Amino acid sequence: MNRVVDILEEKGRDVLRIDADATVLEAVQLMVDENVGSLLVTEGGEIAGIVTERDYLRRVTLEGRTAEETRVGEIMSSPLVVVDPETTIEECMAVMTDRRIRHLPVAAGDDVVGLVSIGDLVKYTSRQQSFEIRYLTNYITAAG
Image (cartoon, rainbow, N blue to C red; front, side, top):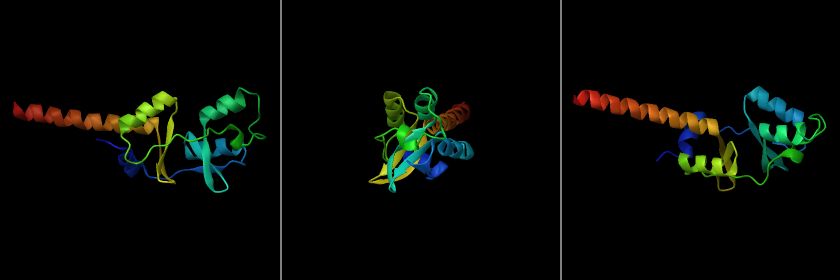
């Protein structure tokens, strides 16, 4: 059974964070610089939520706010929906589909140990399926 920890071992466990008092412009710039779609948001050193590209579009652009004046804490999604490292890939996909989210922090106890996106899950699943197809093709070909 494939688990979230398998993805984290491949992609790494780096989790980008930004303070709730930072401007949305700073958050967007960090996401662009790091080529990511979300950042965990901290308040007083503790994780308080997540800010995503979708949060920006819905809560800044559509509401007529400015990225320079709006604080990340005003638009972040909270409370966090999290999974643990042993959660299966299939369970993660079900949670993302049910909650209509694209990013899942991975927590072990009170510590966030990684973050997976829907893209990470799809890429991992696709690679696993390609491997299985090659294996079965070789097995069938060798048997004939």
